[in-house]
Length: 156
Image 1 (cartoon, helix red, strand yellow):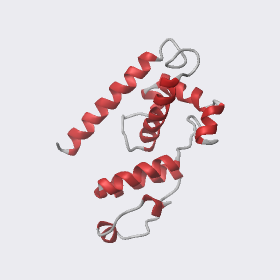
Image 2: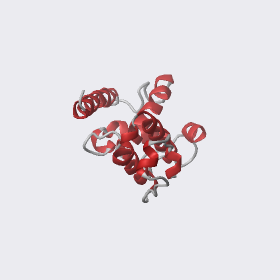
Image 3: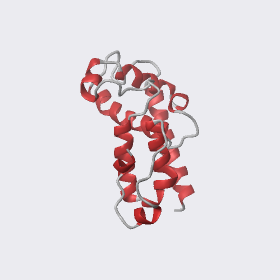
């Protein structure tokens, strides 16, 4: 498949998944009711990763996560304010803070860089810059990066 078809397919799949979550959250605060249950604990971490990927620009739905999936955003915001979330992920790693989770973005970017080294300049560096809120300084030339394994940690 050409890149545009892949991107379109993935965008559609992610949109469908978020749509199902939006529907499930119509009448309740959590997927399991008024309080989070096991399903919420499993889904919340995946939804948080989706949030981070959309907000940093690695997954492009054409609008911010809060606009694309407002109930899911509110769900994650509620969940990330719980003591259990803070205990599991640490303080300041929620949604709605205006800050992206650099650890999550760096891990995903590193994986992308190993699988698709050609995406470094067009996708990965901009995502890291957005997460860090500053310009990323490249430590290696483009030729050196093509001839070696790239680590997103170099940019951080």
